[in-house]
Amino acid sequence: MKITKICCIGAGYVGGPTMAVIAQKCPEIQVTVVDLNEERIAAWNDEDINNIPIYEPGLDKVVAEARGRNLFFSTDVEKAIDEAQIIFISVNTPTKTYGKGKGMAADLKYIELCARQIARVAKDNKIVVEKSTLPVRTAEAIKSILDNTGNGVQFQILSNPEFLAEGTAVQDLLNPDRILIGGDTTPEGQKAIQALIEVYSNWVPADKILTTNVWSSELSKLTANAFLAQRISSINAMSELCEKTGADVNEVAKAIGMDSRIGSKFLKASVGFGGSCFQKDILNLVYIAKSYGLNEVADYWEQVIIMNDHQKRRFSNNIVQTLYNTVSDKKITFLGWAFKKDTNDTRESAAIYVADDLINENAKIAVYDPKVSRKKVLADLDYLQTRTASTNADNVLSFDNPYDACKNSHAIAVLTEWDEFIQYDWQKIYDSMQKPAFVFDGRNILNGPALEAIGFVYQGIGS
Ligand code: UDX
Ligand code: ADP
Figure 1 (cartoon, rainbow, N blue to C red):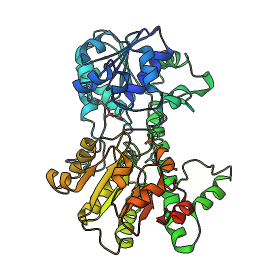
Figure 2 (figure 1 turned 45 degrees about the vertical axis):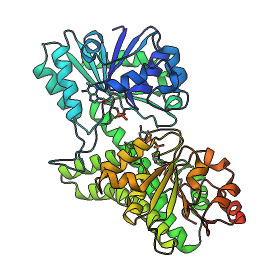
Figure 3 (figure 1 turned 120 degrees about the horizontal axis):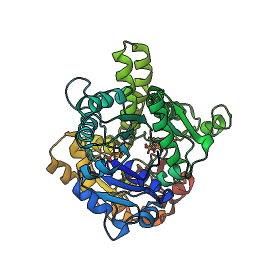
């Protein structure tokens, strides 16, 4: 089957960049990204390429090249479904906030709505690709909806998890470590897999394209994220021990990372991991394990989350303790709000939880992040429902300039590892602060000895 039209439902952090790169690399395929969110689609279509809704290094260029040529953004979901041979589902799958599995299981209502809409609209055979991270056996649910509510047309369901990391999405998409495609072992399933392989073969070498059955593919995505997150919780656990023993976690990470069996990546101790995937996927894994009665498996993975929560709480507690056990009415400046550098995404960012703790202690939080707006900061805090929106607004100050954000503050906390923080004029910042001037480096990116020479009291993680 020669693919000429692709549709992607969901124009978010996964759907947007992934489809932009497919469109760039496959000029003969028409790629339409649809979303219910009109504001988001309007932003993707904004003439000023700087206004596209997702910040990712290099994404503007890819979109500028393909948009209007073979890449389209639209709110007309039905038309795009009708025309496409392959439909990617890339909608959000947040953790359930209600009912059975609350706080653990993935909320599949958006996925189900998509499946029902595809079933209603499709008039010819379609390949439906799961792109969102989903609990194992979701494909089965999608298939059941499609087969039982459709117009008698044939659907092939493929699992094709996305492994891109935000902040490096374009590079990850252009040079993926692997492309994973899970599908049915039937001849029709194999044909569908082949059709998707041909799309990726436009730029991905054949030896990097892996095919499995659907369940292996779905579970591999959860497993990859669980293993990555586990490394961070492991090094963060050691960071606490390092602080007690006089060891330095950066040195420990370097020493163990040179063991080729361990490897050096994902060993950076931090204030805690964030992002839309790690916590959600591990909770999912825990929920699935529990539902099969595998309590030891569930407990094992849940500990990764418990450690991460502990690390965030430890960071805020340490700020309070160090500032003489009170931060009431003190200005604490947050450098960074995004969950990592080079993204404007703030989902599950450690900054949110640290700020929440400190506001409980009556601190005033001054936020500067190069890519995150005040609106988003407040929305993140309001989402926790710890206090009223107006109390949050009263306790959070926002700045467009880091020097203003730091002026008169009692302490600076680095929550995101943005490169620009390293380059600041730290003497100028020191001169404008209350004394003693504290820096809590939640990312270990600043030069501690240099800051101490200026006069700061500097504390990193794990030393
Ligand atoms: C992750 C996976 O890496 C990606 O493959 C998957 O598709 C989606 O989930 P993402 O959440 O975008 O990607 O970013 P990632 O680079 O994995 O970072 C996640 C969090 O871990 C960030 O908060 C980051 O700051 C933190 N982190 C990462 C550390 O604290 N230490 C590290 O060594 C690495
Ligand atoms: P991700 O990081 O997984 O890409 P996002 O939340 O950034 O998650 O993006 C998911 C997008 O999917 C949102 O823009 C949301 O509006 C969109 N969406 C959710 N359900 C539907 C649906 N039924 N039809 C079209 N778009 C949808």
